[in-house]
Length: 52
Image 1 (cartoon, rainbow, N blue to C red):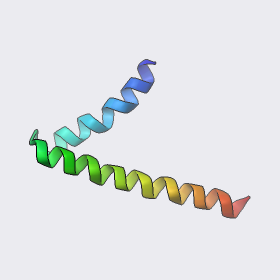
Image 2: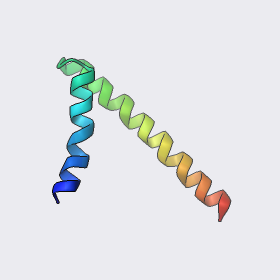
Image 3: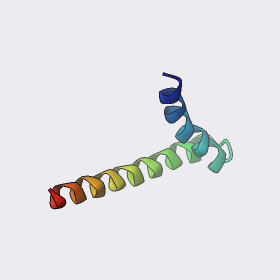
């Protein structure tokens, strides 16, 4: 449970640090990180499908 909480709070902490605490920049940074995560996940799924 603690590890899962750490994985959930780490991106939020990184976004706040990168945005220097400004709420609008924090939200946009989280959005950019979400898009990057979605692209990475889709790439991995695509690789798995083509390999199988």
